[in-house]
Amino acid sequence: MELYQLRQFRMVARYENMTQAARELCVAQPALSKTIRNLEHELGVALFERTGKGLRRTAQGDILLRYAEEILSLAHQAEREIAESLSDGSRAPLLLCLHSSSELIGGALTSFARIKPDVRFEISRDMDNCDLLIDAVVAPEALPAGAVPLLTEEICLAVSPSHPLARQAAVPLSALAGEKFIVVSGSQSFARAMERLFSKADFKPDIAFECDSASLRNELVNLGLGVTLMAEASWAHGVEHDRLRLIHLEGAPCLRTIYYQRRGGYVPKNLPVLEAHLSEYFAGLRP
Image (cartoon, rainbow, N blue to C red):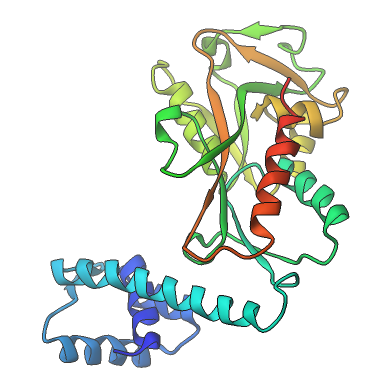
């Protein structure tokens, strides 16, 4: 087996769709199909079942995917460690995967750049090829193994200053029936927070609009076009308070915990320095 075969197999296995996998890999679909056929022939098993809607991994496909993830991760780590060994390691980029809290992480990385101006960052949403994952959970028991908590904050309601609820310090969840919500697309932690908050409500939140940035979301809420959920620290440290009002939700509070987690076995020289800085920076955000 070749590494390129495993890379292509992994993408097909993730999507269980040849067209989507070919698009992500930037290869022609016939060439990708041939790679999978050759791999199946070499192993003597079917890795996928062909269905009307696409593909479904077989038990053997699940086994290969598990090993492919590990092999490709180790190969990537080896390449990076060899590259770093050719220098003092101070200029090796740090690979970050940001799944949550980008508005707060931006401040942390900016202050880190003042301390270590030579360190470069590469940021993506790829958990498989990163040094550090930064994410958030809305249940303490959901923290993954090896996670280091940075900050626990309350999820509240944010409204425009002209909103009828703006003068309230706290409101029950029932007061949000009929409100139009504006959310940031791809924000997994807030999607989980919304699901947790409304799981016991007798209505579903009306998501009127999804935007691609927190700043746009805040502007739309400020204009009175809807309401949103916002974390307390994000509001306290990143929002002009005359533009949005923060309101606590009565009952059991919904909390999110921001954390970082090392990924892979290779530890770049500057990674522990960044981890220490993140812990110090977020300690300063605690009320």
